[in-house]
Figure 1 (cartoon, rainbow, N blue to C red):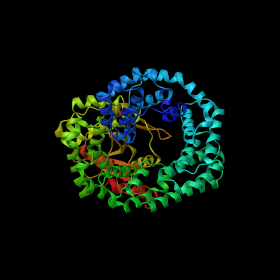
Figure 2 (figure 1 turned 45 degrees about the vertical axis):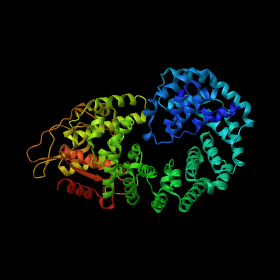
Figure 3 (figure 1 turned 180 degrees about the vertical axis):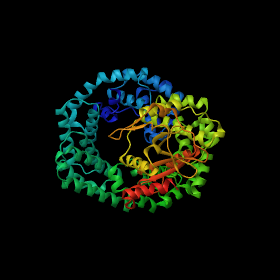
Figure 4 (figure 1 turned 30 degrees about the vertical axis):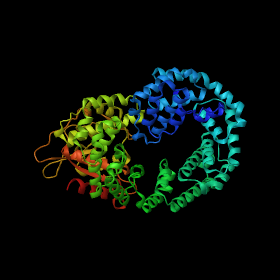
Length: 619
């Protein structure tokens, strides 16, 4: 229930409470703050004078600063640890009774997004108070619909929808009001907002008034607005039962119009900063299929405009696209290296990320790694713990292990701080950080034994293994069967073999010193059901490994699907190479089978596949 409440926002406060806030000096000073430290400075100097409006403004701004950063780059822990944040919490708890309805819910939302725990007394008191007021909020809204503006109706609708407010007749009224606003609007941002909210309401098909309005304003829409409209159209397509039987020209024509306008906007753009701002929140199938290629052409055309201020944003965008673009990356590396002292130390993570993830190696890239390491090293203890783990892992993928960074992360003090922070992170980021810490621990143990970092993730990996009974693809089943034929029998190959440090190798075989296959004395611990489900025998978790005779070798055969390569490319990504390096350290000869080779026209017959495997393994 608490997380439903977060959807009610500052718009509703303006609707239900017509009075304006007093524009006193403290409020004015808060409103011009551009960073967390400035907000805390105002709070610290005016503790005794802060009103409920001041507290609401300060908390809202602290969340706004975090929201503007990508989730991986947020510094919530630093904000929460500031002494003046505790001041705001105490003041908020003492002033709950003075908050109007929507101020209460807004502040609750901000505190939750700043990772204040649900069991915290502040949150519990605010939640209890908010639920008492929600019914009254909704009834007041119904009485005042005739005075609201379009943006206000849209936000009301979205808030009540996310709150799962049960009143179909009221939602029908809201929908009709929004369509009326839509028909009379000529502002792209307003039209986009209304379309986005309308798409969340149950409607069997696209209203003709929506199509007409999009046609009227689409040439004025920016890339983010075009992307938002494409998401809305996709929802209508999924909800229209007749679409499954025939292709409605209105949907096709609308998507074509969006694509054409997107291309034109990119082709006529002349400011890199504006393009990056519009691309910041753009994602999804429509963008990747229709505009991604043109976006890269535009960014390359604007390479001369890359500077130290926009290089981290461009680098982060390239990471998201999964596209390798050497000219852009060389330019980023050159600019960032030259002006590294102007780049904030925490932005080195975003700057380095595409070079690591996309496995881009060049002279400029090597200089960038060195420059970034020198830049962030003096500030290691100022990073949010989870961000430092992610930074160290990205460097490990690129085979860089700065000793001071590694020793800090695997210190008792840091691991304690990280453990405390993990309890406050969203589930997805929590799991991602835990996984990255394990992978970093494994990488350091294997690549840098001289650091003498202990391997302490054995139990964690066993738990992951037991939870992770996944599935094996038809291609992997096909390779498994053919390996048996090539090697002389299914007892000469084992599937889903768990190595020391818990890598799972697709297939393992053993060859003697004459490259002849050796049989396994123990049967495979893997069981594959008819539906491709994978189940492991408990023995597989004990890292059972048969000793090799003198001169023999252990071969790991891995099938690499499209996720192991850059988009629309045969260029292998960093994590696939990291895995190969580690398996070689563990004593394997690693044979990688790229999906584009296995699925190629040259390997379209049974004998061709077998011959391919022979050349790869029995060389």
